[in-house]
Amino acid sequence: MQIVIIGSGNVAYHMAKAFTLKGIPLAQLFGRNEKELSQISHELNIPYSTDHLEEADLYIICVSDHSVEEVSKVITGKDCLVAHTSGSLSKEVLAGNYRKASFYPLQTFSKSKDLEYEKIPFFIEAENEEDQKILFGLASKISERVMESTHEKRKYIHLTAVFACNFVNHLFARAKEISDSQEIPFDYFLPLIDETVQKIHEIEPKMAQTGPAVRNDVRILQLHEQLLKDESLDIYKTMNHSIQKMYEL
Amino acid sequence: MQIVIIGSGNVAYHMAKAFTLKGIPLAQLFGRNEKELSQISHELNIPYSTDHLEEADLYIICVSDHSVEEVSKVITGKDCLVAHTSGSLSKEVLAGNYRKASFYPLQTFSKSKDLEYEKIPFFIEAENEEDQKILFGLASKISERVMESTHEKRKYIHLTAVFACNFVNHLFARAKEISDSQEIPFDYFLPLIDETVQKIHEIEPKMAQTGPAVRNDVRILQLHEQLLKDESLDIYKTMNHSIQKMYEL
View 1 (cartoon, one colour):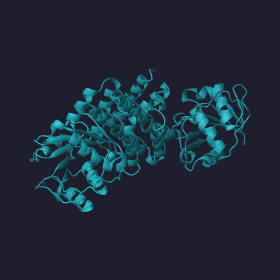
View 2: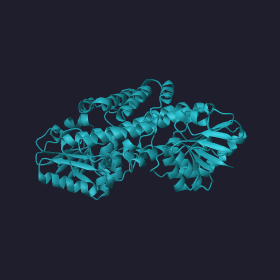
View 3: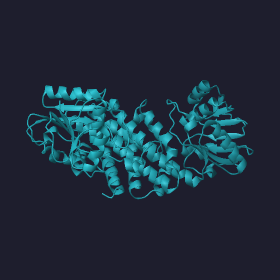
View 4: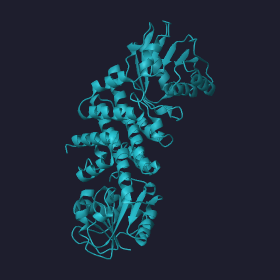
């Protein structure tokens, strides 16, 4: 089977690397960003092009959600399967006369950070059983955890991931801003952060909640508000309100 | 040196356990909650009382911030050192004629979750060098990472911890609420959550940010808002606004 990956960003890089590591040959990397493509091509030993799209049986589109539709138009073949890797888009957003699918890896990808591909849950949606089988087979070579998912469910999976990953990372960024402002090294907080996450492998997050808001410690909440301003103050108030609502305080 | 721990909650339990594991004898556990005290006493083989406070050289008060002042009044001795474990209170909140100190372990404590005490940063503040030395010595038997800290600095350490731990845990709780609502097992998200945290051991949180807000993907942001309501929607808007401000989008 001829497989082409379209894109040159974090997801494209890690998908290409995962396929390569598992011995699944890729016919081409295709994209606009020649610099990024040539780096990935060089590292993984896969041909690339910015202007001539290779004919293939399967195209996996790994670009930002807002570019998926536009990019999907470059595929003019009909007898092929095209999958995107978006958590939020329907497969019907793909704009061509080929068979359409979704191939969604639930993970946060940065080029500079290695990943254990075996642990990444993959969510598959296709038009028919045969395509489903093809994508299941491929994903199963990469990961131990491959599941079907409708678009409706996938939207909620992505939304959950935004809370559990993107927003969590932003809290780390705002936390570091606070500690930086007092010249407190941020690595003091790494054991606490590690423990916060280890905990929820064993205890329900709702049961693991600690801190002034869940204790309804009004004096500390007021003190903290005096130390904060702007967006960090907004986050502080919004999170405390939400904690107190959850525990009916 | 005679040491007494006051309290029977999560911090009291883990402090008593850490001292015991490191071979530092405790003269007594003192508190109000007989059931909790007797359990800890039984597990760690330390005497306890709810009415007769033992004479000691050092009392470590491990109770909620809002109870520290009240509890500190039960210590009537003068020739002793009293330390609280609060991140936010000054040592002067301790209401007695003894020497006052702060002994702050930066970690999230739950009785049901084991901890590596060696990695917990301890922040020490005392009235004089001798007391500082005593508390440094004790903390150093438990942990590899013991530092001085003023009250001013400690307040910001605690505030940073609220963002990096308490609020992060609450995001997990809200994330689980979303996935539960669609019958999506929350353990699908654990590899993503683990990776989110592993990443910031290697990359600055600000550089590690991913997701629709930092990509300014307006269509996805609007879609997500339609899927949310109440506190989760408030969090969604507040966090996205803060992300977009941080990256000047």
